[in-house]
Image (tube, rainbow, N blue to C red; front, side, top):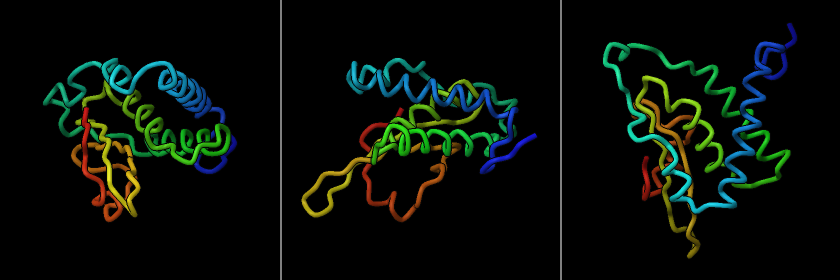
Length: 144
């Protein structure tokens, strides 16, 4: 077994292949369709479906690997300064079918007369890998 930056090979190869596929899928989809059409493709009600699994723990290690893999691909391969929307779409897509309360959110804030936006994932009511002080600047405008 080979390890690199928290990834274990060959076990995590499937995760990385799926991350590459989903990242390119949402990159192309956002170029061809409106944002509203993209989020309408997700099934309604990705929140927890089965209360018997309320105590089921989310695999934060896998979630972190997906987050880091998507961020690396977007920043270093696709050279984007703003990976948050596509990363959020990939994570939401990946965990939408799970029995966890998963939400995606897009918010806006105004800094120095510039309107900025940010997208993030909320898992069981807690934003994932977000600076809470920074996130408080944003007013959520869309949640799904």
